[in-house]
Length: 237
Image (tube, rainbow, N blue to C red; front, side, top):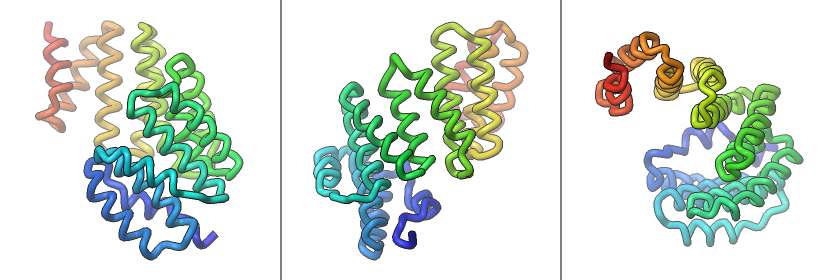
């Protein structure tokens, strides 16, 4: 549909490091967007407002969006869930993420469906591994290259679930999968974070020389990264 929000344009508008500037761009874009795209953009404006500490305004904006469009409704549910999760009420967020998942699947929108699964893995601690695994399966099966980017976060999250449980070999495998996804679809920062995670798992496995070699390479690229320097300190003989 010609009045649907272009995902590539959405990526251009977002800067998660500067929520206020993102909000300004969304407002400007809404002014000239067709109806459905404008509603999608309003959900992203609400997200930016929430990230900027204007939670009440974000909630009011989400409450004002009335649409029969499945994608718009999925986005509204996602952002309502994110608002509750970020406010310290993950148990209240779970039904919204489940609703977003159902709506996104009905709309055949793989990206939003995996977004919902990713958020369910965060909010529902007891089911995190299962939600994340479902997200990986859907992302891998998707024909949408943009959806494949979710594999970075999903494998990373699964890696830390294993690592926190002391399953270091399984954690390493997930971090390596996150690294492969980052190399294929991610930014330099995501690639370097994936490498750091691999090194951390190697240290837990007692493979200290391999871990040190990775962290030393990262130190050249990230000389001010305290996580790299802390790891190198921990890896001193």
